[in-house]
Image (cartoon, rainbow, N blue to C red; front, top):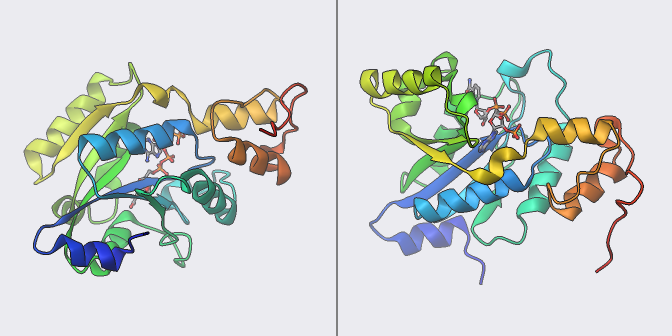
Length: 228
Ligand code: NAP
């Protein structure tokens, strides 16, 4: 039987639920995100991982980002078979710019204060965290898991995180995830250049991209949909 958030809160009795918040643009979502979410869930023994596609991120003004309804639909499709995964419309439906602090406050209300949150995102996004809205409050409300691509841990990033750990009440964890060699930027470029994206993301997402003409590409010859 599928457990709703209410069921989980009731079953948790006095202990806090451990909830991962997987924030990202997901343009498009790919196996790197899915493997990461699953690896983090296991390592930190999370009860649930909620994917939160960004809505109107203030830090992406002037950058071309795919319509949020498509990014949400792809994230929903990609996560549908994992009982521990969920996708939130929290930022998709919010008017105006979307900030992580508002998202966490909203989740705190939804979980009635009975959850410890772990915000999971790319280490390069965390590099800028002091420019985010109400960072100090955010550090008090959730722990951070900074996911690094293999070989990507430049000294300056490491120093930045050490600075945050030393100067704020912050809990920041690092996690190397080999499958994170896959990147959304690379997938978009491949589609645009009519290069195969097979095995980089679920087939349902590949089909969605071509059906909706995302990233202005055509399915390359020899990369047809498989039918079982
Ligand atoms: P992004 O552009 O989607 O990603 C930045 C980098 O991190 C990319 O290399 C990306 O790889 C990787 N990445 C993205 N999501 C990831 C995830 N969940 N786990 C592991 N790696 C991930 O990220 P963004 O839009 O800058 O922001 C990430 C999160 O931080 C969002 O939830 C955003 O709302 C939040 N944020 C908040 C503020 C604020 O509140 N002011 C400011 C900045 C960011 P791919 O390209 O392959 O996905």
